[in-house]
Length: 116
Picture 1 (spheres, helix red, strand yellow):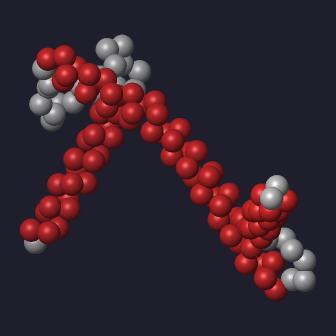
Picture 2 (tube, one colour):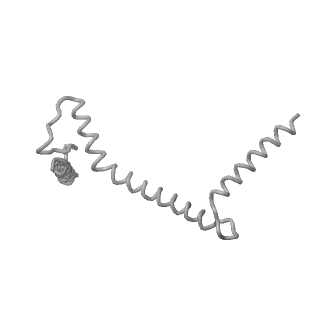
Picture 3 (tube, one colour):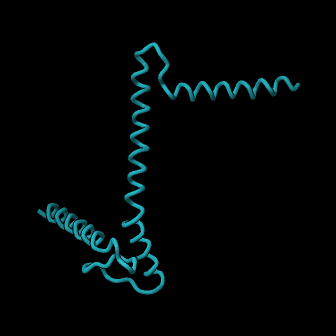
């Protein structure tokens, strides 16, 4: 029973924090004001409040969106590599990277051997 109560309390805290973010998204003082949170004082407390507001209201959504597109693109590259295993064509983008690295390495090695 205690485990369910603990989970319920954590979910309520998250819901209330999300509601506070939505209410303070366009706040003029750039702070997330909450009924449940203890207000911070001093210059460091003000800086922490502003950083928390900027992260939660401005940056977090964009960072998550960019990471979603990046990981989605990488997943598509891996799928394309897996599909190209069974086809006779070289559609694997990773094989191009490896072969280009190998060519560059041999060119550098060849240049140093010719200078002798």
